[in-house]
Length: 122
Image (tube, rainbow, N blue to C red; front, side, top):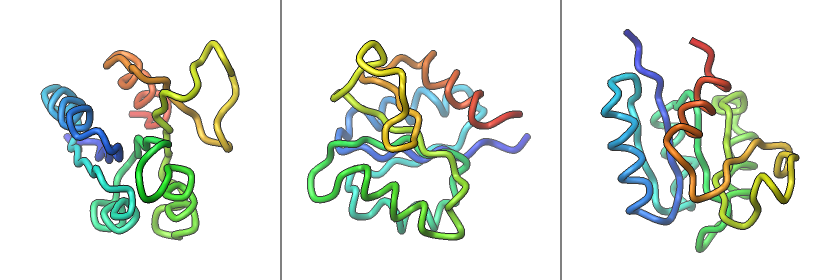
């Protein structure tokens, strides 16, 4: 079975570590994490993820800029990017953020796995 490759970019290392361990426990995913947004694009090029979960508010570079770097790279342009954010909730907006779907923090494992299933058909 080919494991789906998931890349989590968030400056909160406790969050990324917990999400990584929880997703890998299922046996269906290979997960890497990055806590420095300035390194995200290069790490994505190396890892070649199937989906990216990307925080919006991070020091040094925000998630919107990271998403633009990834989208402008022909190798990564079609990889689904899902924003993770605490700045807006689903009840505040039903729209995407800058054309990208998003999940509101705190996010449940159930919401993450539904999102993976929606954006990465089996």
